[in-house]
Amino acid sequence: TLEMELLFLVLQGLLVVQAQEKAAVISPAHNYTASLGSYVTFNCTTTGADEVWWMVDGLRATTHEVAGRDIQRTKYSYTSTGIETELRVAATVENNETSIYCFGIVFDSKNFFSETLTFHVQGLLASPPNLTVDSASGDLGGLELSWMPPFTLN
Image (cartoon, rainbow, N blue to C red; front, top):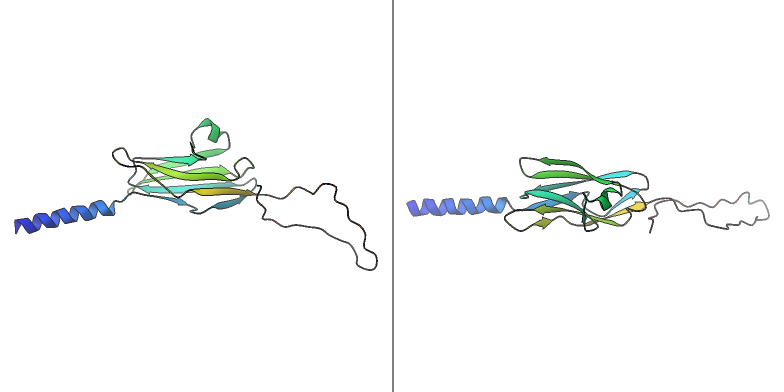
């Protein structure tokens, strides 16, 4: 009947709307640790957004404060399913413990966010000050002190 066909079309429309649910996925998706002096590229893929911003410590990644920390958006492209964008972050002392997320902006609806991750930078520890080693007597040979990474810079 006509009523059944209309009901089917309405239900079909609802299913399409549900399938187009908004999402923002960032990868690597968890807190990330990088070696001092390296670079890491984060990727954000969204569905349902009109625009996507990277947020770094609560500021847009395009601000001078963030760009001055050697953090920059390196990709921004529209795909058949949404927007893909990348953020390149230098592993520096200043960027240690940085919070990063992507922010999906929807012009006629509610905005949405990815999970927030914390970017950790690890490096070698500084030599301990005033280190002295006393010689051991006997046939013990030499004495070697060492430490191995990873160590975060906080």
